[in-house]
Structure formats: structure tokens, C-alpha cells
Length: 124
Image 1 (spheres, rainbow, N blue to C red):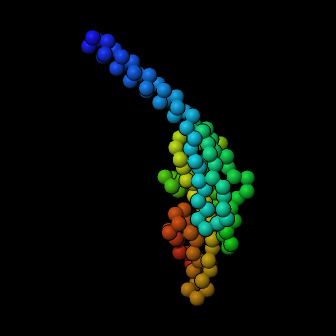
Image 2 (image 1 turned 30 degrees about the horizontal axis):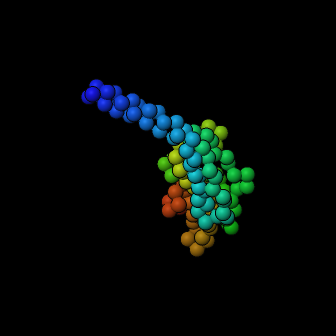
Image 3 (image 1 turned 180 degrees about the vertical axis):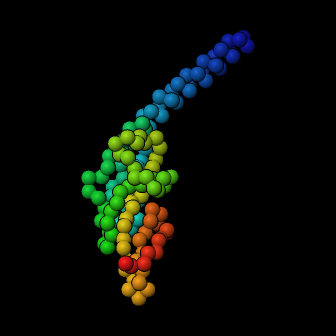
């Protein structure tokens, strides 16, 4: 009887793993677009293992130019909608370029890849 119990337990575990793996392939993931103060972009629901679609209309933000979508993990490489597949819920972040000229200090401020990183350059 112990042999049958062990066999049934192993088979149950095996099928549970197979069944769980198959379901994960059909899981739906949510891709959220954080516009960092820009106009709203609607989230997408994507089947795990599939690709998200780049929004047809780019967000807008007064005084800024939209550069593209970036993941939090790699703020220096633009998200590749053509090749990157979605494996779990994901937030993509809008990257903006804004040049602020401060004539009193003779400097320009240009935001870099992260929200709070700035570089100061003297005007030429």
C-alpha cells in the first residue's frame, strides 16, 4: 500500500507541475504606462510570453519632449516593443527631455534618465 501511495503522490505532483506550467503560459499580465506627469496612457493586458504594443499616441507634457518608454530595471535602454516579451506585470516609464535655461546663473538644466537626476551645463 505504501508503494501505491508513493506512486499516486508522485503522479499528482507531476501533473500539478505540468498543469501549473500550462496555466502560467495563459496568464494575463498588465503593462502600465507611467507618464511621469504627462498625459494619461491606458494600460494593456498582455498574455504572458507575448509582446506589448507601443501606444500609437505618445504622451504629451507641456514644455517637454517625449523620448520613449523605459523599464525601471534599465533606465538607459529604451523598451524594445518589437522583441521584448512580457513575463509578469510591468510598468514602463516615460522619458522626457526638458531644457530649462536660467540666465541668472548662465546654466541649462537637462534631466537625464532617472526622474531625479539632473546635469548642469554652462551655456555656450
